[in-house]
Amino acid sequence: MKVRRGESYDDEKVWKLLEIYMKRQALMSCAVSNDGEAKRSDGIVAGHAYSILHAEKVGNYRMLQLRNPWGSFEWKGAWSDGDTKWKQHKDVARKLKYEDRDDGCFWMEFDDWDKIFDSIDICDRSANHDLALNVNEEEGNCGVVTGWWYGCCSFWCLCNGCWTLYCTNKTSDETAAVR
Image (cartoon, rainbow, N blue to C red; front, top):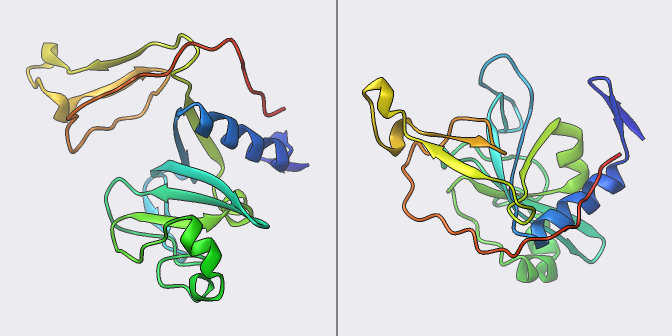
């Protein structure tokens, strides 16, 4: 068990939660708390949300693929783009379809992620949750550039616009808990 910001949790349960919601194709993000946005020495921007694209166990490695929506400022630690671990563990690179590109997407081990990130946002689209887009027409600035999600997601997004939104999962009565 770890204690962080007054909450206790079991990191094994957090990994299971990520696996469960990844299979459900939930929208997931994570962040490092901060009063503003600040780039850290490890490449992560504190106070900034990262999309969680994949959670996959390959051999003994529990791996997460994250994406910085800015398309830059990537993780510089173990398993980062260009790291020697990709050449040492070619089976892992093959399974995860690793590509060394400076595109904002990067892989990291769950144990490193668990030490750095302190919040997860999950929008479970499979359990009758509403997802809506407010385009702020009443403020005189209409369009997706000024929009944000509300309901299960409460942070500003869509700075690049919404092209297509698909919500195709069937409803499920299952729930997952961390505690």
